Length: 106
Image: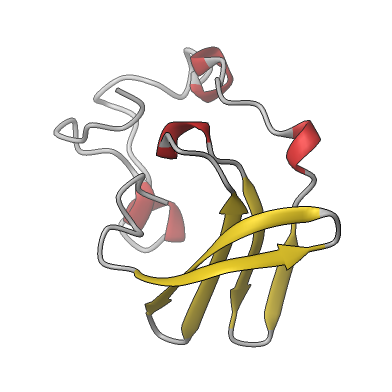
């Protein structure tokens, strides 16, 4: 998911989930999407608490949230990397295969 996916979301106000005060957001996609995050003045300090898309509800444990990701976990083994190793055009992999022009993980 792109970091900017909520850039056109509509602020729904403050709410309370379990013991947390949260901000709520709505954005229409293929289904209505509701996102709730911890309250913090700085948006970069907010942590996901809940995401609801249609009939799918995901609750998060904010105390387990990690803001940094080790980029090494996305490194392909050497036998899979390189410009000569490409997914079949008929595979689902092909849809997600980098073309070299992405800003992925930058």
